[in-house]
Image 1 (tube, rainbow, N blue to C red):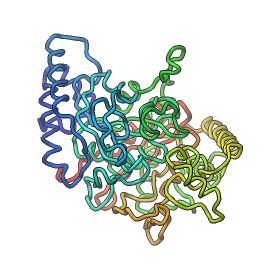
Image 2: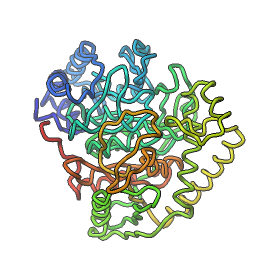
Image 3: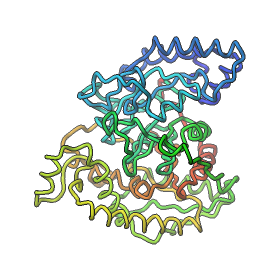
Length: 478
């Protein structure tokens, strides 16, 4: 079944529906591939082979009967371990949940299953999905298929590694600090961070099992090797949550432009407080040039009417507030009483702010969102970096804030890697990531941001770059 290893989800579903291949054959091939290749990668951390094989048999019987089939009918997939999956251990990387077996599926997992997908395994992540690398005390460290000395990214690093290694054609990620975008960028695959609120993340951990609220900034979204798969998956995932579906429906508008030559593209790649490597900058400029060569209107100077630093500061404060629920009251009180500069792991720096202060930062966010809206009256998308460089080497030193990243001749704080994703995430914008080339045999991607709720526009821009620049390139040895 190796001819289907790197097929898209759409191609795989069509092959099953036409009888060219059976769901069971594909699942057995995926299980064998994980068994033979995943040792040094450690992307897949929990298998559900017996139940998945039974589901595949049922899927094949449905094809034989001529039943009406869903768009993912019989397609074997993996799922990030932060999403509760019925009957399959879901830990979110925490020893506290090492034996937790959910009785139901997270909302986006259920939507994939309703479309016919068969979940056969879970993929690795950092504890509580809280790092740009994927490692934890339950399952260990996940490596990048392009270079096992490097991370595939986080927090959806197991997801991106599984896609790059050919274990699955489709995945499900979450993103509050680039957790879809960074792994796709560093693992050479495609991902879409939806507009905030478009996809229900009910059943995502954190919060703890049973939590009904959805954190600010945080979203769930699709990951794949192909833009068409992303858009198909977004159509499955998007819609009102269980609170709102009684009265609400969702119709995302079509892409603003059908042809690359008609796009109005802004390019934002240079910021003193978040400098990117020269090699990465060259590839980003190559992506911009692809639009120019196609006849698009490309502007390298246009910016929304606020500063980069203002947006990043807003993001840092609101991220801390959103992450506060993952910290104990005593930890937050200790920070509140401290007279030192905010330090510690991701999400605790400003977690002790009072609610009235949060309201002030939220208003700043809303003002920035309005500036973005004005900006997108003149532009359709903006191209920007995801992080500062290509994939970094494993670094699990503590505290998180003490780590550094080498950017050409500079040493930059590890947390600078959050700035470009925070710039768009805090304003709830959709962002699509697509590969644009490689640096020292390691892939990098571009972040394509667009107007709120106009997700199809960023996907359309990503589709053009995928076609123009070659898209996913499988790692050597896979």
